[in-house]
Length: 438
Image (tube, rainbow, N blue to C red; front, side, top):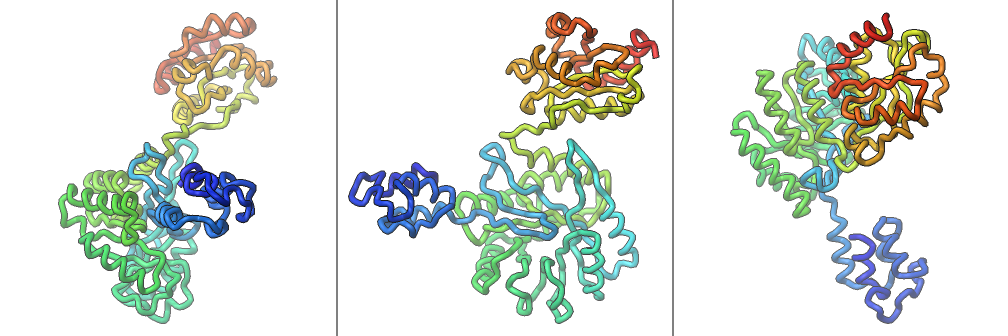
């Protein structure tokens, strides 16, 4: 509930006796409502709160999906909307790889998984953890995994004494009698009604940290899988059904890379919080991390990089050959342009304008990419005064700015560049031959 909704039910909003009585510790009922809405006080502080408001407040504050710490500060769940455009998704789908504790190649496979990482649009991505099948010698194996800063979901038949000193692992077992209540446990079924019943049962037994495993997707058609996962999320988000108010895990046992990619892509979108893969393939995860990043960005907050001059191919040491290229601070635009510039030998100062994360044309139309802004950035960066070739390449889509820039920057040659980033290398090569003569 927001402050206005709360205030309407308080004495001050109802304009009745005891309005603004200050017994809650705040000067007015509105001040109390604001603090209550922001969770900076308790509803019990007001002695005149009606039963109706208490009930509404309790219902409004039911957790839709609990956020679970998987380890190493990696969170899962915590979602509050069905669709990202409503607000945003919170925690990206987590990726785990299946390993068996008795695999003779365990150490090699573990090292490959732990060493894998990719960088995209300024973010570095790694595999989140290991889905460990208990085949003996489990305690030592868990410590090996944790030494690689990977999280563990343990698949075992029964918890034994050897787990007594092993903390911060998630347990999927047939029996939970000896599991500490503080551990996160996995509740599993291939039927969502049975999954709901199991979830209710273990919560009544005192377990408060769960992962719901929707099983055997390999034996179902993908449409029914997506329907079931959507129904689980709907029950949690819209109906606040506490049986489903936890992250959902799925496991892909498929071995064909193309089929895995298709299935995982659907699960990322609808609505698996954790995906376990039986296959580890670097090219597969390169694509899946890219998709995941696109899905789990905030649609209300454009990706952007810091507005400044970026040095590519050591321009300070090569001022006689360096040029200036300019674009906006929209992250996708920046990395597309920077990657192309890094692939060629020309020393370049990449000048990034403060465009609120907008693309080139959007920034120009919103007056976030103006000639005056360009002039200011050029004049503020004294290193540019030492360039032999006073050349600024502007985006091809902003050809209309050329004359204005030439007028306010008379000592610079303004060149209209390409519309697309992939055209940059050929464009710069031609420029070097015709103008810079390098």
